[in-house]
Image (cartoon, rainbow over all chains, first blue to last red; front, side, top):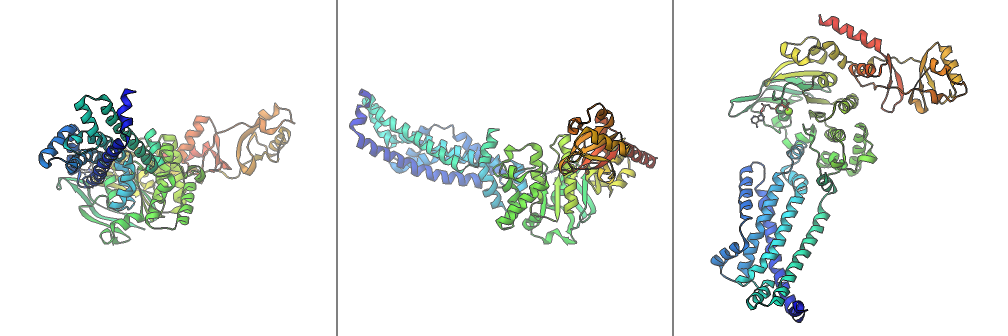
Length: 217
Length: 375
Ligand SMILES: Nc1ncnc2c1ncn2[C@@H]1O[C@H](COP(=O)(O)OP(=O)(O)OP(=O)(O)O)[C@@H](O)[C@H]1O
Ligand SMILES: [Mg+2]
């Protein structure tokens, strides 16, 4: 087993890099989730339809910007190291979370909102009892997309000295050492899959049965 | 509670367009008033100004002579039941939670809410056990509208606003819901403002009718006066040509059926022989047959019974029949009877218990009296 040789000979080192990778992801992604949901909510409050549409247009367009471009830009303005890398990852994850939160909230059925208002719910009650619960599928899918691309992009961020599993991959590429490349890429893939699966479970747990049923129809 | 509109106006586009133009009228306490008119005439706008989903641009709205401006918007809405044009059930909430929304906003104790939800489900003819924990996605269109109605009644409001609550429903279920709704209003006697653009629905449900066009009131009167004395051609065209038939829609079966009639109780009369004897004694050629608790099973005729052995079970010779409910109107009764080819039709309550019979002849006589008043 040529392919696995580097992997098995360097398990402690790989674990250390995996942890570093996870750390980069976790910090940048969590801040992005909180910020993105917040921006999504603020930009879609009643009377702010214009802002909401602008946010959607901007985040929709920037989703197409390649991750290397974001990393390169951050490098130009902030130099190298873990902090600039995390900032790049934060920006990159922020986009899908914001986009999905805003579009989810903007797509809540106007009938439900009108009924809620007519029944005497306050604006906050409408947000927390109607808008957010019915937008969970959209928001959750944004959060999951953000997690997966964050973990993938973190590997590239090794270019600007972020550390993490990308470091092993890049050394492998330079040395043309397939076993090394593999030892770096495998944990990235596993990490992405595991995180996505955990988030899927969480989504299922907090989503109302009524919503699941209405999505099936 | 009485609601008075005083020179109520809603302008759009900086005053260039008046969706509602200077209307004044009083919605009577405990009455069901129907707002009707062509699409875009301002019905929904009028309704939404009453619970301030739309702010008026002129005039005033008074609840028992108190101006709407003196009331807190949120509290006002919690005191007014509201069923919107497209139902708008919360898809992530169970039937129970949907109905419980306003009671919870008003911080009712949970047990009281539970009792209330069950009571309301019974009222709209849905089995609480079966439906309480379902989600909107598991309900038919008609069931959703029933929940919409139940939800608007939840906190026992004095005033209920309903915007085409039966709009999205097929004609048959629509009539059933209307019947159920009339029965409900008989019990609760609320001030209801009901929007529709179906004249038959208006005549059937309304104590009074407001006819609107282009943001104005064309006629406002008791339903019977609107039908008999339309203000102008616009109202006449809205009523359509068959006013005698429309008149039948205002009258309900419950005021026009006969309660003394011959029936056979299959719990006591078990054989063909005893049934025949009974019919001959009463000099009848047929009779309705009821079972346990007076539930209608059908009817039997002497002709048919004579062909059987007199020891045969009576039940086997019973012929099934159409029936009609007391809150249906006479128009529906006529249609049912014509379609089934009946000269009389049994009247049953919602539990299928036989209450009486309605005769075709009675209906024809009533129709004749309308035709006279039309001349
Ligand atoms: N926000 C708005 N801006 C401008 N015009 C409006 C607005 N809302 C409603 N209108 C207009 O006001 C008029 C009355 O609308 P409304 O919704 O009250 O009609 P309606 O009688 O309920 O009709 P329908 O039977 O179709 O429900 C319509 O011509 C409509 O186009
Ligand atoms: Mg309308």
